[in-house]
Length: 347
Image (cartoon, rainbow, N blue to C red; front, side, top):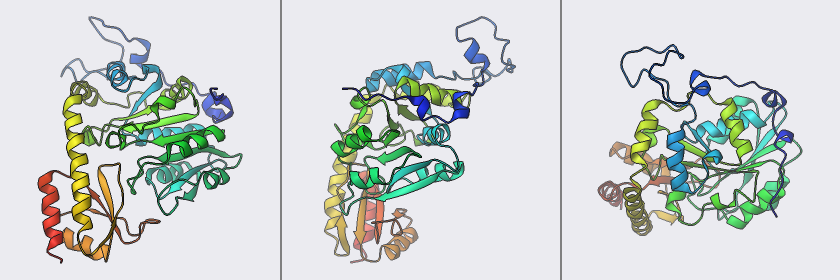
């Protein structure tokens, strides 16, 4: 039985009554011979024209790629935009709170802090999994959003699917599952669960597997009601024309991306084994992402040494449950070999 949700019980009152800005491209969306409605410069085509505020053509391609209806898709400036918009739309500053796992992606905290919203952190277990009782126990009547990241950053592992759905089934607010690394974890997305859980929001991105980090193109998938809220409060032209044009081109390269993903997964498994063989490495944690979390002796010293060698990884030693650990992105085979050769010099 599909869960019911009254979005007006969750929305901030001022957002419910907000009259959104109506741009020239919202009021007329067809083709014409002469456009004199948006105060644009008539020269330097096509960059003189405002972009489609709802990115209809890009959404059509995303819809075909993800098998999700266009009305259930929000496109943003990276996944960070919908994270920020969700908190601003649903959380009353100084009153409401969000619940987040720990450790996880740091932007949930930053976006909440900017909006003056309390963050309640719930520790993962020692094997980086959810304790559903702890997550739900951290919630109260002012908890509006639970943020889950799967595969999680910086731990790399996928969270238990049944545990995430149990949380979505039990919680009366929104459950946001950030799937930024899902392309490296085939078969583990929750996209197919959206119809059953109207309080579920799935975030994905083209920054990782698709190699579009510099373009800043993220996605949110949710019920029509939630997508309408995001469209209501976003900046009118949140995705520029260059990003939209390039996305239309690159989204046709699905076969190429599949090859990249296959190569990176193979490199990830090879790197995990080779890193594990180094005497100063304590543990390479299992990963469903395009990176590895590696626990080692003197992680800070090794990080500093790698910097001197011109190799930059991420020191996560001060992150909860990640003491003395480096997060290492899986690069090309050549880049990975350079890293390994540098580490072998320490033996």
